[in-house]
Image 1 (cartoon, helix red, strand yellow):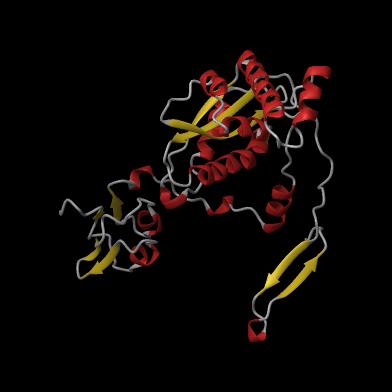
Image 2 (tube, rainbow, N blue to C red; image 1 turned 180 degrees about the vertical axis):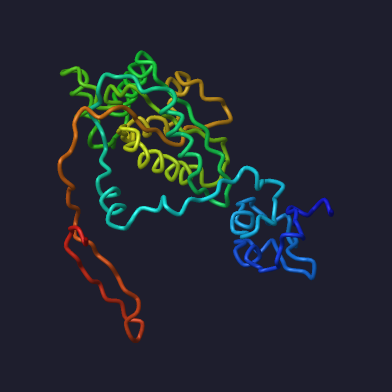
Length: 291
């Protein structure tokens, strides 16, 4: 086989249906008289679509092996009403029980997170798990110190900084990391294209999976603001390598409270582009369940 050939075809199983060629997003595959073959090896992003779609397990891929793929179970598909309620019920958790999260559960969250889609299948997101209370408390203090510097030295700072400083200094309340028992940082190498976008997908997967394990989560937006400013004391605390950067952060733990209802949102606004003469019409639908 040619060294540039990324796929291995079992010609005894291949029926030349062409599904692998059709599904290839980059069109790196073509169909010859002998079956599918790589025609643009440099374009392939190793997504594994060609292997996953083959009905007869006739294709293997050098960078996305058939043996590593898992058969789908059709009975795991949830119905639309259940999915709708599940997605709407996701809420940020800002009050946690003082109970440690088991390492096994944190690993389950991260395992799901790393399967999230990424731009051009670049992936490249790594994670730092912090479950040491003292480190989390110190991180909160560092963010507070950074906020104080921002308020003193910058003409314009985030409107909420004085509030968070007052809550921490006067009332002893942690509104930064919320005394969460666990804290997850996403990091990537400097220069990774779409690192922030990839992180958002990744941590969104983590957040949506968390309730299945009885866990709650919340984006650590104030911590992210400090981290994205490359505040050295914060980077040093987490020993971020020089060639890496923090790309996202979430708090994780067992929710202290349980919500009883689904909340509303602003009315749904949809623009349809199917009107005659290319005119656009904006329709509005009040928030509420469609089921």
